[in-house]
Image (spheres, rainbow, N blue to C red):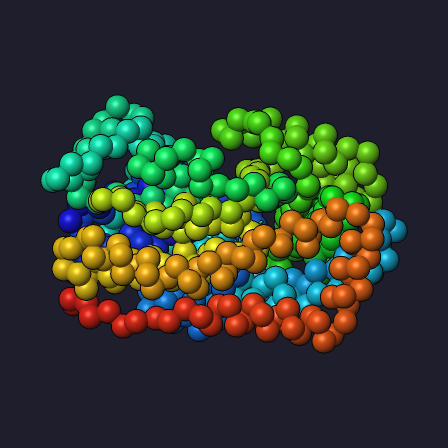
Amino acid sequence: MKILISGASVAGPALAYWLGRDGHEVTVVELAPALRKGGYAVDFRGSANKVVLERMGVLDDLRARQTGGSAMRFIAEDGRQLMRLPPEFAGGELEVLRSELSQVLYDHSRDRAEYVFGDSIATLEQHAGGVDVAFESGSARTFDLVIGADGLHSVVRRLAFGPERDFVSHLGYYVAGWDLPNEFGVERDGLMYNVPGRLASVGVDHRDSRKAGAMFVFASPELTYDRRDPQQQKEIVRSTFAGLGWQVPELLAGLDNCSELYFDSISRVDASRWSTGRVALLGDAGYGATLGGMGTGTAIVAAYVLAGELAAADGNHAAAFAAYESQLRKPVKACQAGGNRAGKFLAPATRFGIAARNRLLGTPFLLNQMLRLGEKVSSDFVIRDYARAPQCQ
Ligand SMILES: Cc1cc2nc3c(=O)[nH]c(=O)nc-3n(C[C@H](O)[C@H](O)[C@H](O)COP(=O)(O)OP(=O)(O)OC[C@H]3O[C@@H](n4cnc5c(N)ncnc54)[C@H](O)[C@@H]3O)c2cc1C
């Protein structure tokens, strides 16, 4: 089949790998002019993640690039430690930078798929024989299937399923991340500084201690801004954190020269169905949770299952889409629930909330319970073996 995938971050290239391997003619269209940079770390946990990465043949490559994870050291304004979470809390079993994961998946799939950067689907129209797609660049093509792997603000979802407001719930927080030189004396642990409703944090790249990454989280009702205008987004971050102490002014100064700002609401996506006709959603586009919802591992497993079901259904895309959704809906929803707590956990709204979080997680028993919960949720995925034709050359 001719299959168009929208989005080249994690879910898109992972699916492109499997579909290309199975002999489909795959095109991936990405809005950004090149693979997106932006340095936050993502983690994998649980056997399903590991099995799929192994079957894709990228596990060793990712292990060679792993960050090693960072402990999260919550500190007072004078740098005093208030509470420390071990590296596995945020770093799982394997942690890599999202940008490097994306690069590995792209390198792994580029021989089997056509990548088109700097373009986007403008319209799509389904009919019995396929999906007619017009691109913003002016070109037009027909595909058998279209897959939306284009994240929280998916254009495929908007065009084929309905407006964003029907699918995306704002969870009351925003997150911003950017890279900057490590001029903060950060060594091994990430440093996290809270005031009510706000978190400013910085972590070091363990493989090159001259590089650091800042992540800020803040409580806010939904904001109106241009998602394609990083200057506007930088202004929002600057004004929200203006006047704070610790190293916040220096971290904000790093915004001036960062290579890419990541800025988004902490939101979750709920779609009552993941496909309509010849169009399906994958990853954050269909069931994202911005952060805290194990979205990367989910996207990798889901790409494997979607491609596997298409191979098993032998051309019957309706059957494949139904099997993909029925297998994954339950475990995906369990993972996604973690996203509901992420903002409140990272930036509690009150001084009391900050102190209570620090006290509770400073207790080894409760910390272990939290770690075990993550393990349990990620072990709910069951990975089928899909009978596949020998690899297409
Ligand atoms: C700070 C932070 C930390 C995180 N940590 C973790 C973690 O530790 N573990 C974890 O599992 N997950 C983590 N996540 C979540 C994880 O990043 C996502 O769940 C995961 O990247 C989902 O990938 P995706 O490919 O579905 O979507 P995305 O990564 O959002 O990619 C969507 C792609 O589509 C492109 N696109 C958008 N619009 C269009 C368009 N109109 N046309 C074409 N392309 C388009 C975008 O440019 C992008 O490349 C974290 C997220 C954040 C923000």
